[in-house]
Image (tube, rainbow, N blue to C red; front, side, top):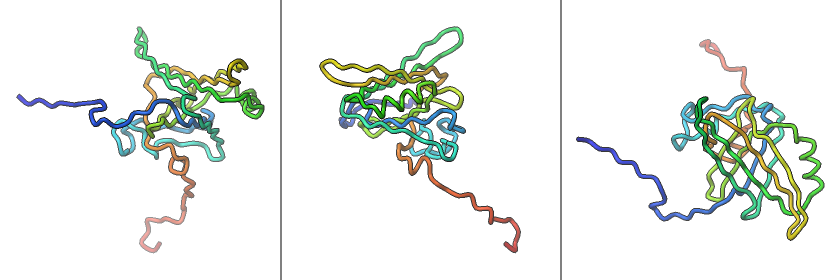
Length: 187
């Protein structure tokens, strides 16, 4: 009998930092396509390739950078008659009420979002898809601390995916298409 074993976990005793460090939000209507894991080669199996995300030219990504403990991610799975549904949720606390951020939230509150985030271990994630983005909710408090809370949540038929990189220069490379290529021998 042949047996293959698989092991998962932190058996190498590597550090494991919690929390989300950075979050990029793209309007879901600017997302042209997302190639699921395995469709393009990636450095790690089960990961969306750096070439797997197509965004309309001129799109604007908004990035939020958090102090330690400023943002968390949770994903719940539900199975019912319609199948399995994944419910990702990002909860961020932004210190100090900021007029510019509040204005941005009010201008964009009706939009749906594609979220890309980086955890403190250096792992990048992606949630949202063309036509089905995360909804944004906001609350503010002035009590022991002064802060704004943003919550992004959605419902999808797949879990939030890992993505190969969080670096915008690699994900959204500015590459021009060259029309001078030709199959003829005289080119």
